[in-house]
Image (cartoon, rainbow, N blue to C red; front, side):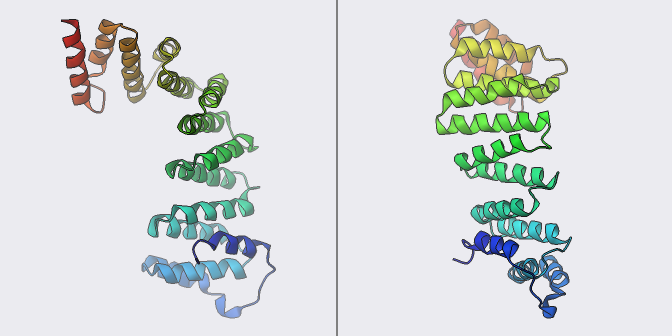
Length: 261
């Protein structure tokens, strides 16, 4: 029960007035020592008490982050970690850099835990953050597209990824937007659209090796679905030496070559 009420406690801390407890002045030193010595329960107790007492301390960012690490990395409690990040955003949401850092962690954690409704809401907050760059917006749209695809909102997924494609970003980020759009089109069995999108990606200058391999593999699958088996084989042969799992490519090539006999 204590852990599920953690965020409520911390939000209350933010709203409360300063409390005078001289005996807790060394809490941060003691908490750091307990953390290093892996006395995590004691460290957590001291960090929480520090937040309650020291309302204006510049060390509050450190303390919040330690509590997040304890929740996420030590206790493996994703829900507590999400609640902590939300409480952190209440305090630091108006600070450039810190707000963005919190939203990235919160968005990624929501995606990892398959809380897609939460993830969409967080990535939309990132879109509206004043300091968000076009690259931040591209990443947010790509994640929104993935989340909507997961929830079955396919039209909204396509809309988000098209918005990503329309952003003014560098060639590589643009290629990633196109690739995610093509994946969604392929998933929806719109193979003609996926083919056109992927052929755009292939033409991207200085496409990195990993993304080139992924694009080629997906385009190979598209060609196969469209009955263009020889083109599918040619693409797979091109990435045999660069794809992270060459055995999978070899098996796929063997299957396609058998079909041509």
